[in-house]
Figure 1 (cartoon, rainbow, N blue to C red):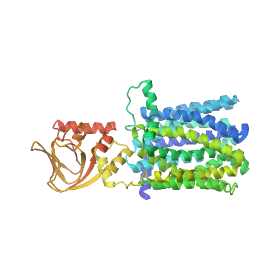
Figure 2: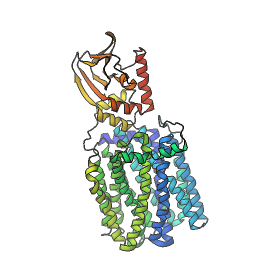
Figure 3: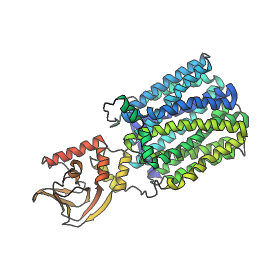
Figure 4: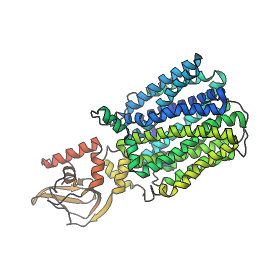
Length: 550
């Protein structure tokens, strides 16, 4: 655990990541505080049914926009997309505050609030796609997600709590005005981030191409069933969050009879539990099997909600909601990390955009479903049904979900360190490195063995862990390669026969990577490809000063 905490601390000390996470904390405070505020506003207009209707009116347009807005995160520099999203959010929140303060007609207020809800869909997919590109190891990525989970849940704690204070003292308009300022601060934090290689390659696209590429996330879900399954499991948890948006208000006002300000306080209790869960998620750092944590977190997420109906008191409700928040946090960190591992990096923002859009519909379905359950069966029954939703969904999906990482193995620290020292692999994001690690084969080769023969077809890339080799061409000795060097990349990159013979001088320990995984990793990342091409070009030109070879 100490080593895991050290990894998390190292991530938190990174200047770029720290600013991203602070901005994300502000985003989460804002999203949840303003959402509680608009639901309280709607509940005051006509009770739970109106609150559910307003939730649906806001969330459905946001759900339709999210998958296409996320295309910007794959098309342009993700740090700049993040900044643009915060600026749009600040403007929309300010407009909503102005409408509420001026006593504008309901449709004007809801229109402005809906624009704000739509603008929120930019941030989370962009953040989720940005983290893998700026973390260097699987452990770093899990740690960054744990820090994001902590930022999210501290935001859930602080945002609704502040919303409760503002609602009690100054009304709904004050909530939107205050958090418009918070969002401006988030925008300032992500200006000129000290990041390397966060830009996505940009080429000219026509309108038809843009429309086609915007559906890239849906195409991945259609082709890759494991990605689709994981997205659906995560969306099931979001359905419950949507139901809680209405249930917090209903429990506060009509079940424990503590008044509307307690809606914010109950949400804060949920956030406090989420903080504890995010801290506990540090235990996931370095762990390859994540589905058990998704299942365990899902059970802890759901069961306390059903228990609230059994002990509906002001003293117990916050504790049970906090336990639920802890389970939600663990399941979310594990689920998002696994999704980042298995989804293609080139369309990662769009995959998370589909999740965000589906999440908006899930929130709407949860809010409307909870309102309907409250109206027909009562608050207690609504809590029981909501609490059982995620456990039942996990039970139905458990067999294929478990298969996602059944064969995963713990990362090899030695192999990881060796790969990270190679310029070809050093720029790769954490998920790409993890896929390479899964495909690596360790080989022991005796002295005198011909590892690569000139003229043969290229099938593997080799990294020398221990020992040395001789490189020759046409019977003429060219160079010796030692531990830390690599051989075999020219034939793979140029699709030509082997250009030299490589023979073991001493017994060798090697890491071998087959052609497919090597090309997928290296050619899919601009900096890695540039390094590999530079090495290949130098060797083909006879520049023997570069490391590696064939």
